[in-house]
Image (cartoon, rainbow, N blue to C red; front, side, top):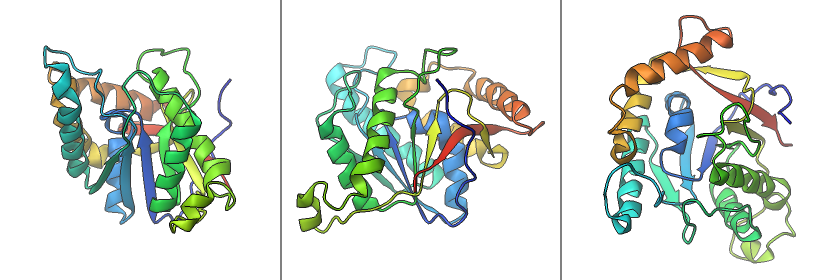
Amino acid sequence: MSFPPSATPCQDVQRVLCVFAHPDDVDFGAAGTVAHWVDQGIEVSYLLVTRGDAGGFDDTPRERMPALREAEQRAAAAAVGVKQVDFLEGYADGSVTPSLQLRKELVAAIRRARPDRILTSSPLRRWDRIAGPSHPDHLAVGEATTCAVYPDARNQFAHPEFAAAGLDAWTVREIWYAGGPDPDHAVDITDTFDRKLAALRAHVSQTAHLTELDSMLRERLAGLAESLGLPGRLAEAFTVVHTE
């Protein structure tokens, strides 16, 4: 199973909400694109479902990891110009499922942020690259976010307690999926690559051991750009789906 060809992105987007499972997910997949949006004057905010407590590559005590990774994500967000970073409570790294409770919390976040566009992880697995994009938490967050977008967030009769609290129904106009099979919408990030790299390096617990991070990223993003008709450039790629 794969996605259909991407829709043409909306041209009048004012707000974007990025929903991901772990600190660093948005930066590996889309930090260059986020920096580009910020430069365009779009208001971008982050919502992380977990604090990445199962991450890391050294002997940092496990009890320190959530606070450490939260601080790293806030520093990474600042590197690309994102000021609003929120975390959900009660979800453990490696144990996320697309539950009704997660959907409900995502609905509240969507109605609060009122984004035109949501960027999230793909709910579809990539069989050509199991590691990374197809982490079960990524798939679960992509699925839960999709269900929160439709039908939950736009249905005025869903979660009436939210309406009573002033969180009225909201229709997200499009979803951008990162990490899915055959992404076909390229964003040229040549001019924002340095900020993407700075964001990733802010995740010290995850990237300090990657001594060739710069060259590794350049090679991967140049190959992606070449395959999508941007030779000599660096690109991130997504699948764009209209939701209205």
